[in-house]
Length: 406
Image (cartoon, rainbow, N blue to C red; front, top):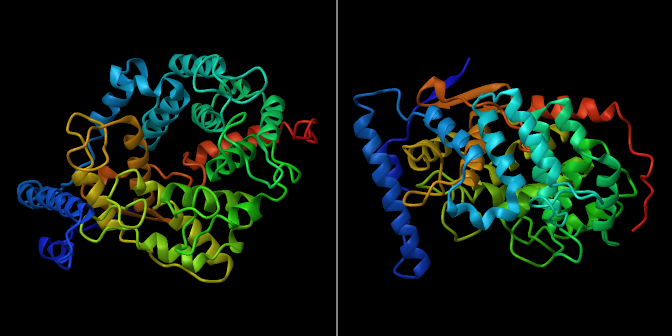
């Protein structure tokens, strides 16, 4: 049974306002502007809740209509994402799945057939039909196919070719480049390990030296950077920690430093997360930062340390998402004043899922119907979809060409 959380009081929120200590900068002015917009949203909610005590409400029907429309037709504003079409499929399917919304078998088949066209004959998926194979697009396509969960969808993935593609992307130091002659960063490692573990093509040889390379990306702040020597970042920290978890090497990072850095990324007044130190709140980091917590809990449990409650303020995060990140006509957004989009809809709902689910407990802010399904903190797919896919691919065994050399 879900536990219903109360809203923070306005007086409590007001005490968290940013103080520039007499040093005015562009960053401080932007922070104050965002806080004012968030505080106004929370103030308006406090007035409306006197009429409807079940507020704030997740506008599930509006989000459903928005997402289903986007599956069929996208506005010209999305033309810049023409090379990211598997991502659009994944974001939409995942957001719908989190809200428990099913799509019909005919549409599932059409999506699977489209993603098949994005698969390179040499392995991996590109951003569209005929595009160069890319690890990020491969991750998105595999996730989308796993969410579809049909045998047709699973069989789209040419596992032997996928494994060969991963070997071509692998570097001698254990890192992975995103595409042929492409950039090398921690996203490549995560995308490679995620698809390899989901589809059962992961071998020891493929990831030799990988965990050492990931560890070298942890910074003095405690988070992970894109490559060694760079700045800690929420998205990269998620990729680094998740990749270590897949490898069974999570205990080798500085866990206390990571926890301290991640916890300090939650904004005091807004309740949402920032991606880097001294940056603004952003709805998508509800997942990128929020998902680190259940992963950290699992590592602490291995050390015999029991976590009895979330180590971040799940009430404040849900408050930010439901009050400040919903478009009234469907879709979610970065922060008040920003446009809705599919990316923020998917990751902000994922963050809401993380905030609501703790171990076997469910904590809901507002209407009990605000509950969304649980998401797997490593793959950001529903756990039931992950289990079903892993059973299917594990029964097939590891492809015989697993000793392909770079």
